[in-house]
Amino acid sequence: MLLQAWGQGEDAALEQMIPVVYKELRRIARRNMAGERQGHTLQTTALVNEAYLRLIDLRKVNWQDRVHFFAISAQVMRHILVDFARSRRYQKRGGGAHKVTLDENLMGLIAPHHDLVALDDAMKALAEVDPRKSKVVELRYFGGLSVEETAEVLQVTPRTVLYDWRLAKLWLRREMARGGRYDA
Image (cartoon, rainbow, N blue to C red; front, side, top):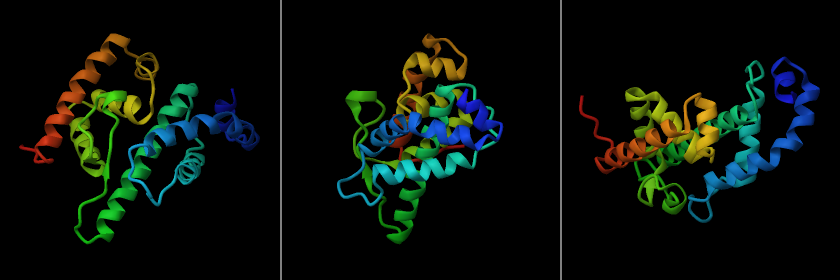
């Protein structure tokens, strides 16, 4: 109800909602930051705060439910981290972007120490080929949503999510192994 009220422009709803969702936003941010190198200049709290600032700009979103809100939050955090990684790469004048460790045991997505920018590029390429599979990866890996929650957001069956998840992981592994060289 608070999400819908906020989506309709009620600022008081946002003030009531933030304490309720803050803990979950921190969990998503911690999950996204877990693979970052030690001493990373962007910390969990800063990621949550930046995501919050970007989310409040999305006032006119027709929020479906809490799962939808957290799916969008995960997407926003992914974009913040990728923007940060691209900025760091640019600042190093062509030096390699920092490596992130993706927890293979947790999600089994790709091999450890892959570049977040390369992952984002591969996901963008996947989105061009199969947008739903790309969204499954985003929701499961970056958002930490369960199979059932992902199915609910995408309005498909859990079995479809598992199928898409398996194929997307294979596709991303292949693309990242190729180093982002996409043949036309």
